[in-house]
Length: 264
Length: 309
Ligand code: HEM
Ligand code: FES
Image (cartoon, rainbow over all chains, first blue to last red):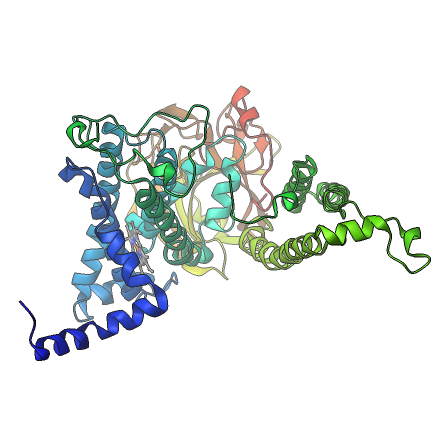
C-alpha cells in the first residue's frame, strides 16, 4: 500500500538526522551492523554475564565521578567528607551505596563471567587474547577494589591497607619495592591516600576502559562461542597450510551454524 | 599478512639491537633507584645499542640499486638511473627516511614526556623524602617505672601529623651491668603483616600520664598478641605462636637531660637473654613478613632505598 504524501514527509523528517550523520560518519550503518550481527542460534543466558559486568563497571565509573565531586583525598578531611556524603549531601547515601555495593557486584560478576567462558571452552583458539585481556581486567578490577578500600579512611580502611601493602612486601625480591611504591615512602603517610585516590579514579579506570575496548573489539570480530551442548564444535580447527584470504576469512566458521543449515 | 600497502620492503628486518637498547633503558631506570653507576652503565649500553640499531635500520632502508656518483660527472644520467626512473624505482629512500624520522622523533618526544613523569611517579617513594630525622622526645625517665612496660604513643613526624602516630611498648630495665640506663623499646607493629599488637595483661589507665603529645599508660603484659591472625610474642618480642617470621622490631634510644629520646628503628631476627642482658643482631628496618635472617633472607637480596635506618 502506498504511503500518503504526509506519511512520507514525516518519515523523511524523522530519518533526516540519521541520514545526515550516516552520510558524514558511517556510524549508523556500523551501529546497525553491530546490533544485528549474527550470533549462534543456541546462545545461552549465561552469555549475558559479560554485558552485566560491563554494566556494573559503567555504574562504578558514573557513581565514582560524582562521588569525586564531594570526596576530599586528604588525611585530615577524607573521613569527614565520606560522613558528609553519607549523611548530609542530598542522595549521597544512595550514590555512595551504589558505588560501595556495586564494587562487590562488579568483582563477583567478573568471576561469574570468567567461569562461564571457562566452562564453555571459550578461551580456546582463536579467542586466547580475549582470555588474556580478561585476566588483566580481573587484576585491574581487584586493584580498583584495593585502592578504593582505603578512601573512606576509617580504621577498617587503614588497617586493611596496611596488611594489603605488607602482603605485597612479602613477594621475593621485588616485594618491598612494590610496597614502598604503593605507600609512597617507608610508612603509610599523607601521600599514600592521594596516591591511592589517583590510582583509583584515574590510572586504573583509564586502563580498564582501554582494555574493555580491546576485549569488546575481539568479541565483535570473533563472534561469541556457542555452548558446549551445541551440535557444532567450538570455533574451528587451527589452520594448517594455506592462510585464509581476504577480510572476513578469519571469521569464517567462528559463528556456528547448525548442521542442517549448512549447504550440502 | 597483507597490510594493503605496497611498502613491504620498508618493513624493518629483525635485529637484536632493540633488545640491547631495551635492556639499557631498564638498566637506567633500575639504576636511578638503586645506584648511579648502574644508571651510567645503562646509559652507555643504551647509546651503543641505539647507534647500532639506527645503523642497522638505515642500512636496510638504503636506496635500492642507486646509481654510482661518478655517473653524474658529465651531467648526463647513467643508464642505471634511466632504467630506475623507467621502473619508478626509488632512487632516494624518501619514504624510508620519513618513516625513520617519524619513529625516531616520536620516540624522542614520547620519551621526553614519559620518562620524567614515570620518574616523578616512582622515584619520590625511594628517596626517603617522607622520613623525619628529628628525634622524638618521650619525656622524663621517671615516667617509666622500672620493670614495667609503658604503652607509649607519640607523633613520629610533626610535619605529617596524626597519620604518623605510633605506639611503642617501653620497659625500663634499670641499669645494665655497665651501669648504663637500659630500655627495651618494642614497636607495636606485628612483623607478620603490620597489625597493631596488643599487650596481654592489665593496663593501668588510672596511672596514665602525658608528656606534650606523648601518652604513657603502664601495663603488665605476659606477652604480646596480634588481633589479625593470632601472632603471639613474649615480652622480649620473640615469636611464640602464629605466622610472624621474626621477632618484633625495636627502637634504639638515648637519654638527654633526664629525658628518654627515641633513636633509630631497626629489625631483629631473634633475641637471646632478657631485659638489660638481651643480645640481638640489629638489621636495617625490614617490611613485616620479610625475613632478616635464616636462609629465607636470600629472597630479599636488594635493600630498599629510602626505607629508613
Ligand atoms: C571500576 C571499578 C571500581 C571499583 C571496583 C571501585 C571500588 C571502590 C570501593 C571498594 C570503594 C570504597 C567504598 C566504601 O567503602 O565506601 C570506593 C570508593 C570510591 N571510589 Fe571507587 N571503584 C571503581 C571505580 C571508580 C571510579 C571510576 C571512580 C572515579 C572516577 C571512583 C571514585 C571513588 C571515590 C571518590 C570513592 C570514595 C567514596 C566512598 O568510599 O564511598 N571509583 N571504590
Ligand atoms: S598481622 Fe599480626 S598475625 Fe598477621
